[in-house]
Length: 232
Image (cartoon, rainbow, N blue to C red; front, side, top):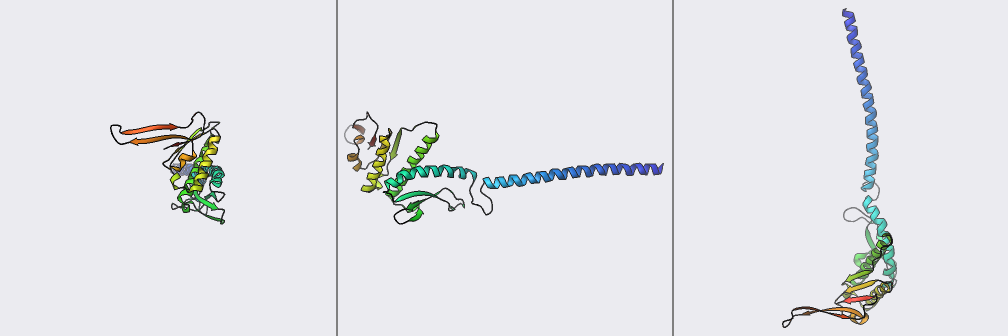
């Protein structure tokens, strides 16, 4: 009896240990599969967050923005080259910013001396031309992606005071070309030189004397057709 009991106890321990070993082996396989999945997910996460070693630090969101930014810049350059007399062209730069990320910076190519530099080096008038070109490029890109939706009106607020005569001519010419394309372009400005260049105006005058304190509006020109208008 004692031998039988001992044998039964050993067999029971053997069966228990075998089951434990079986479960451990199964868990090891599960752990290996989980680790393999983790490595794959970690690599995907690092790629999307721009954290891969030895690679450009570009997040997925930034990557998508870069693709659209390139399209906007291409459209903007069509006008910027005209406004600058063929001197300047915008280019997205890939240098890292102060956050250690790259892809959305902006440089300017100077075709007069063949150099490339930051847009921060542009003068006030040149910066206005670049900004206006980007705004128009963004408008064009939105319309091209909006399923036939058109933006028929545009308002430009200030910036003309920083332009010299040649730059002002180019800017007004670019806006005039938009107007000929059946768009209403409104310029909000205090620059008196624009009065002689554009026929249609809405002049706002402040009244500060007597009993009439406030503002009055004078409408000048024919507004039956599209064109460039000045709000002064």
